[in-house]
Length: 447
Image (cartoon, rainbow, N blue to C red; front, side):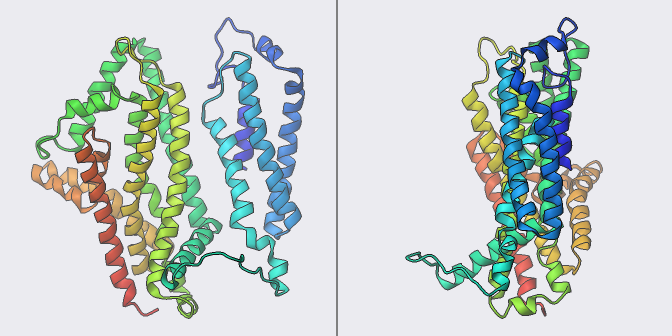
């Protein structure tokens, strides 16, 4: 339904301009007339066909029917992606500029997720009749095999990833991360556009405002008096001069949102099976270490996929709409934007891993996925608030922030490689700590 609404939004809004707005001297009918005749005729047909295919695919998925569940969804996804790309191409050639907003992301990303979901995640479900008849597929001849422990770890990782994508927690993580992150990023872009339009600011004035805001945000977060040795002016220059300002603010926002989003992927890794005594059967075929670390790797893979989609969409949506600030005679090169996006993905993934390990640890303590989610969400969100509240009474208490990676994760975007490397090492150390504490409890627990 979200996919269908996104497609309808993309196709039924006013033509010309990614935000659905037209200048006063532009006639919408003239824009429509500039499109090819085949495009104008096929657009409503394609929308109706995608709606019918999506309806039959949903019914087939609920009834586990291969023909309607798998193939209707596959045809729908391929057709939807192909038509969206065609629409972008046609509008660009018509001189109206390609779409670059949330509707375009919906029309591309969700069909892609559907395509992978029905053909990879549910692949064995569509082969259920063959499995029920006792027909098993033989392993490929001449293939190489992993050592026993590595094989069990890889199988636990793959099964954890597949079961997460089939359940509410995995799909909730994927959709919540993608939609929550994009909504936050687009909110920043909208605010920036409104400020520029309403105040009629020039490019250089906006650049000064960006620089002032970045410096004060960083100094305020790190309580400049409690973290000596950080040059906030140079850091602000790195974010808003050497790199696209709006994109840098987007990465800083996502570094604050990701910890609250990724805990959804780890809070049910242990709790449900422990509550239903499911480990009794799993431990007949594997060992506890493979289960614990394999499930963490599976959840980390799901988080990596979610963040890859989020960062790619953010770089595309924000990078395309980035206003050319008057930076002398130099604009920010495309290669710099791509490097910023690539490092942002690595930084956000490093940020997410400690909170994912914390959620898994909490999942091993509480036999309820919802209960573990509530506890870890409150704990993650409370640390920054507690640190700033205590620091207002006695500034050195700001270091309570270091109970979790909140005090290190923003440093991943620092201009000096040594500082960023230290922050990356700190995030990995937090991950090892939380994962080790959880393993210590899980190893001795009565399952």
